[in-house]
Image (tube, rainbow, N blue to C red; front, side, top):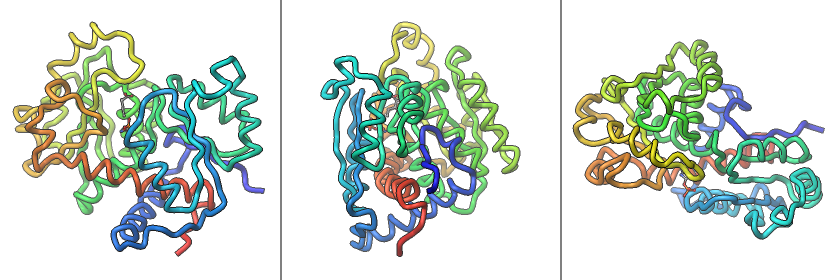
Length: 314
Ligand code: CP
Ligand code: NVA
């Protein structure tokens, strides 16, 4: 029997597997656009989802992706589970492994996913943790490749370098040969182990991973400017963040440092007037809604990869 695969971080996928998933995501997009999206190749399968935090895009895209593949989603929240009465993650994982084919969870602490994955006999998928947001980053790089299929791009992440989105995007870009520069306050720099792991991949791909303090320097000649909220779900140091982040707003002044045809991405939800101004968020440069749409196709590709051995059934 094939060993189960989890997706808690993109570091669990090889660079080739990430490429394969993105390729499959484009194929799914073409199928859905042609009105041929419903191919229930995974009919009869089931996924149990657990939410410890709110979600709109992930919940909708993941459930819709599953339904297009014929997968049943059993959706729950921690409060509605016996976890809320003290049942262990171990027993939760062991029992769910008897009913369904995968567990997908959005959690406050990444260690929750690691513990579920350790005990589950089935794949565990990260729907966002405090450390990583792998499904988001797959849609992010898909969107970048859609707009710049033939360019060696520079991606600039501005704002909270310690956020889940920055960590996952760093790994995705390094895996696919995209230069990646973070412009962030030093106290909100990315995790040093994540940087080190991304750099190992970047070296193989001939690209770079840089962290700088100046947002203008980070954005210099960038093709993609990415930002995320300064106040990720679950953060506690609100006052410190309120002081540190204002110089890191993505606005038209900052964009003047980027390449002429640069695009702007944001995982959303955005907080207009904080990390991004409304004029930039809704400008033609912003591809955030296309990016959100791509969550559907990358989720389909991931579900196929994990539940059907990555085979394209067309
Ligand atoms: N980008 C993202 O994960 O959005 P949701 O929180 O709405 O799922
Ligand atoms: N970094 C954000 C992403 C939301 C999709 C958060 O964790 O709240």
